[in-house]
Length: 263
Ligand code: SF4
Ligand code: SF4
Image (tube, rainbow, N blue to C red; front, side, top):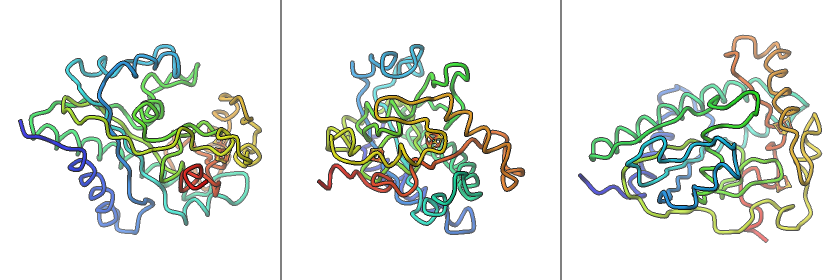
């Protein structure tokens, strides 16, 4: 077995996302990704308490796994700015969602293949739609895995705020490679409101009032994501699973950075 370091994986994901531009034939939607890892220790035992009650443990995916690997692919500012307009998502927000799901799947396979060549088995999960539609909770939540691996902190909008912000998408996997503890966030909170500063901009941006300071009407949000797919003429050629909104991540203080780190 060859030794694999976190730097090897960070270079791999950065180059993969950068090369996507030539694969797509246009400039793409993404900025430089972030990647963190964590040893599979007792921190992951609390997943059923903080996420879905039936959330699986990393060892349920791969008994011999030693590390959780999580990554965040931030969207470009122009795309997020375009999605700020109005109460419904712009077409490019939907198109970029489809492209990003595909990117995350292929990137995860590329990481798996890289690790496999070095002699380490890995196990992947889908980028999205791996959850219970009654409870609206994932049995494998990239967001909660990323939180426990210190890729970011939760915002009032219930998304993860990383050092590159919250406007982007997450992926994760488990691997036999022992990568160690490689956090990327260095503040206890990354949401201004949670850090007891003035904000709440995501609350007022939500078109269906699904957010408030202490709770989240998950069903109202979910219904809105479905409704957007059904009512938008510009979405008719996109897959039926294009469930997007993103208004609470559009040009917020936490969209592109951790605002608490700047205080
Ligand atoms: S917009 Fe403000 S309150 Fe909402 S998550 Fe971001 S920093 Fe927190
Ligand atoms: S994604 Fe849209 S509907 Fe859901 S909480 Fe954010 S702004 Fe509200």
